[in-house]
Amino acid sequence: MVAFPFIYFSLLLTYILIKKRRFGISAYVVSLYTLTSFFALLIDINGLRSFETVNYQISAFPAVLYCLLLTLTIWPFYRNDLKKISTIRLNKPRLFNFIVYFYFGCFLLILITSFNSIIKILSGNLGELRSALYRGETITDINIGGVFKPVFIIANVFGRFSMIMILFYYYSITYLKRSKLFNNIVLLSSMSIVLMGVTGVDRSKVFYWMLAYGFCLIYFWRRLNKKQHKSIVIVSGFILSIVAAYLIALTVSRFDVQDSGSGGSMISYTGQSFINFSYFFDNVTNKEFSLQRILPLIYKLFVDNGIENTTQLNAAIGLQTGKNLGVFSTFIGDIMVASGRFIGFIYCIGFYFTCILFLGLKRKTITNFY
Image (cartoon, rainbow, N blue to C red; front, side):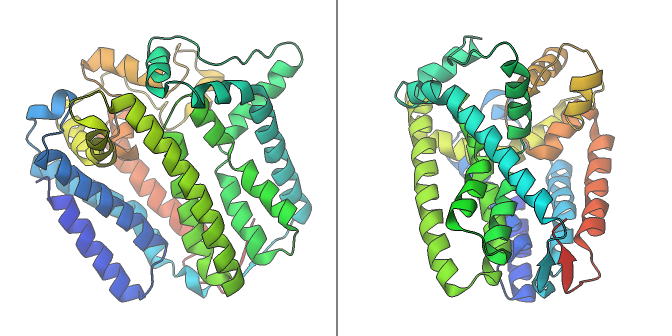
């Protein structure tokens, strides 16, 4: 069954490309799952399973469910033919500017306070630094006190959502006649999450930023002129080179000493989601029901359960289930582990109808940015 998702998403991608005759948002997302499914095959071919999944035999039901639930969350982007939207109006330009400068301020604050730590991390042994974090040690030199501490906390909270500014960036260069300086500020304002990823010696935050960048690039590409295409290719190539260098350096430093090597680590990192999803579906039941995975801010503000982040939540569920949960299993797998299968189903259904509502399936030619 390990080959089933690769075959399924390959056929789905082919269908979308034939029907749409272009590489749009739905094709982009499906191609990502096709890629991860292919790497799941490579994991089994090269014997790279880890933890409890080593001897696990993937059953048919979770394999089919994995494909169907992901398709449900992708399908609104296929149904909504975004290419027919000719104009995206900006109703509140002052609010647009405020959001841009607010997020840029968050970026500057995070950069200034963590600059020395970033230099120290990038010039050090990334593998050893990551291991130190796992042991609970502090590897940063960020000490903010007094009246500035609340400001720093606010910057870090909003910095976690800074990827939304990639959308602002592409909207600005596509529809607004703003200066290059302003557009660069918008792009930089999206990178707070990247800085936070580096200070945590983390691949996932940087990788998710790159995926979001690709998502917006695909959406706005046909709305850019040829001159902008050339500029975007150069900028994107530069960004991709830096991101790739960081990811490769971190992977080699952390995993080159293992038997599978850094190459095996990259295969496992890319392809483990399907295998882990299936294993969790068949073998993990969390008796301590929690919605903290779906509603982290609500729990942060109103529920005092001693769990501050995803790592602690995984550790708490791991103690209850006896399983290692610090691995990728897609967002659906994460929700199912914490909240149960039923909530996982409801989440996907709710996501589907929410997308239908906000994407506007009436195929209007004019829509609003906000």
